[in-house]
Image 1 (cartoon, rainbow, N blue to C red):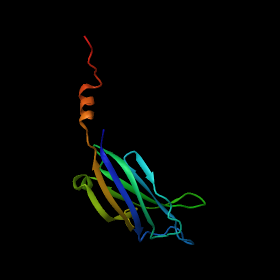
Image 2: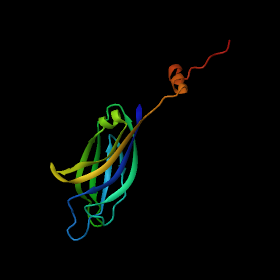
Image 3: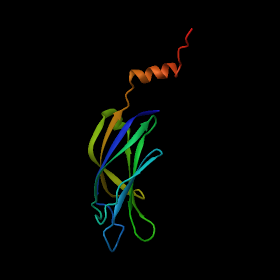
Image 4: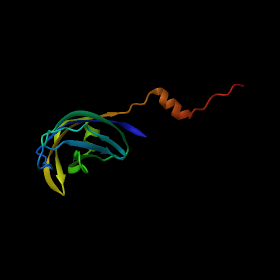
Length: 145
């Protein structure tokens, strides 16, 4: 059962390790919250200082603890390169309601390799009276005598 919606504003990154030696890298981010996965657009040619300014929405249920951000470099030939990743604890935004744009460390092989800027907003799911009635009666219908 969902307990609300998590809105993630992916702003940008800075100081990323450039995985392309001849060109600027073309970074994108894979955002994962439990089994839900979303992908940002590719910041073509923006190198180690990409800007995305994109918003993603995840359904949050009991027990969700972290949001994972995996930064990749899109390559036209061969496989995309792994740049680094960031883990963001969900609990602070669940209790605060929102966290303004904040820089989170990007790590690769346990080493710092840049920062990613993300804003978070949590909106709890509200139950209407009708939802409660339907849950209480489970679709039970009064029979006529």
